[in-house]
Amino acid sequence: MSVEIREPRADEAALIAELINEHANAAFGETEIAEAEVRHWFGMSDVWIRVAERDGQVVGYVDAVQRRGGAVELDIRTVDREAAAALLAAAQEHASPKPISMRVVVQGDDELLRELVEADGWQPVRHSYQMRIELQDDLPAPGWPEGIAVRTMQPGEEERVYEANNAAFADDWYFQQQPFERWRSDAFGREDFDPTLVWLAEDDGELAGFSANSWHFSGDPRFGWVGILGVLPRWRRRGLATALLQQSFRDFRERGATRVGLGVDAQNTTGAVQLYERVGMYVARRNDTYEKRLS
Image (cartoon, one colour):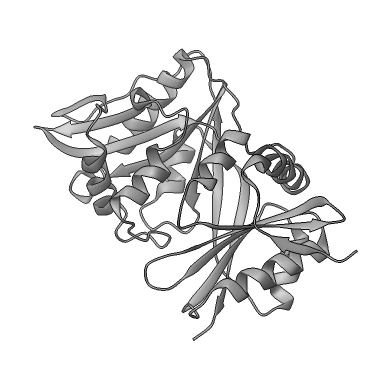
């Protein structure tokens, strides 16, 4: 039977997580998503989600988000070639009025999707890394720059971190400023959100940098995740990012984690990749962003 594209049902979060993990195991050899993460996606009003179904079985997943400036970002997960083609076509049809461009991330070794988008005229424009560190017992203590005080985020400080995030990433290639409520939902809206995992570094009461951490979206209780590491321009080149990472690593280790990961633009101009390597992180996988210009 041919593939049908439809909206997922609310009770299919576990099924979709299983499908995404099938794709993840094929593309980079491990599971990636827990059911709770899919339920979180379902709650985002600006995320368009569809599944591909054949003969009563869900065989593919796509979501699309339109960013400010007109670009539409796609995430396609399937190991089924026909489903991948149908999902890509449905997402392009959905993008109306036509955006300036569309982007899709080819995860790890997903050659099926890579071949499909290249044949359809998409061009590689950027790549990113997922980097990790295996935590040892003798982690170095953070060396805080002079005048810096560190503490965890308190309830009600989310907008302060949002403003710092906008300032810290204004020149980042991947960054697109979001409305506060949308950003807060993405950064702090998960079921297991714990504000004591978010570290704030202040200089005389002014927010100089932050590390917004969480547990990995796979649900692995031994896998910590640095969701956003930001240092405002005025405080860069003073070792603050290194200290925030070291603080995060030690905190995760005390909570029982054995590894920590993060995502980074591989062509970042602030030297982030080199900084992460200096603190002991390594490249666990590469993702490639493809773009199709529509106007």
